[in-house]
Image 1 (cartoon, rainbow, N blue to C red):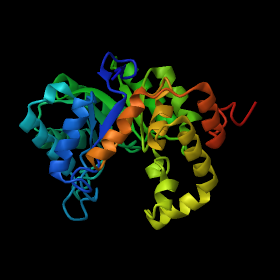
Image 2: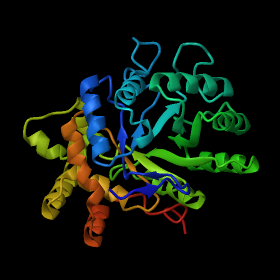
Image 3: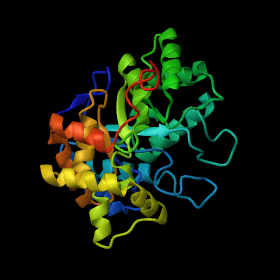
Length: 328
């Protein structure tokens, strides 16, 4: 496994990040343990979770949020391997029904961090990520809260997720004014079928030295051999089937290309992301150990220039970076 630095930081992480959103909801605890064992043995040292993962992600429904963190905490306690992983979690989503039990206020950040530390059974979080932009909280307040957690040794780096490019710029300008490192990473929706962030987000991250960690890299299964599985009688949700019907010509061309180069579709989708120098790592969210093993080969898969060109033809992006993509 060839490790990469997380953006402009000196922290080294594996090119594949173990996403644990399925832990506790679609994947039971014993299987989650085996997935983490297998991931670490394979060289994956970056584990990603969130305080809301493991259930319906809503405090208005039955309890379930926080279970993913709890499962990771139990695994860490059982294995003693805390110092072998870069542990990342997130803050923003509502964790209770009170008016201050959500968002990025200093009040909620402090309480959410303490709760995550307790569930994870650790004294520090390596990468603490804002799960979404909070337009009601000023950056001065957000960075004050994050700086306090860094001083206390409870977090080491700060990341973002689902931000717009101008949110990243605003965050970094505010952080620089405080002589604070600011963002180390951004998690964005990015895959061959969803390339909008090429317009502004990727240029912004490159300019500020912020590592990109794409989520949904295989397009909710669309890039993982969906047509072949469909032909075998395995069907997805109605919405997925409708999308597959709409994209059928592209999916057919894509799966044919993957077969021609002798690589699994999911591996090609992951490897395509890793060819982008702004991408530090891409999240894989396996439900089973077998799913994880199928994705591991992506870290060592090199795509030729001809293959990359053909992928652009099958899945065209927005036309480059803004404003040149739509103006002179």
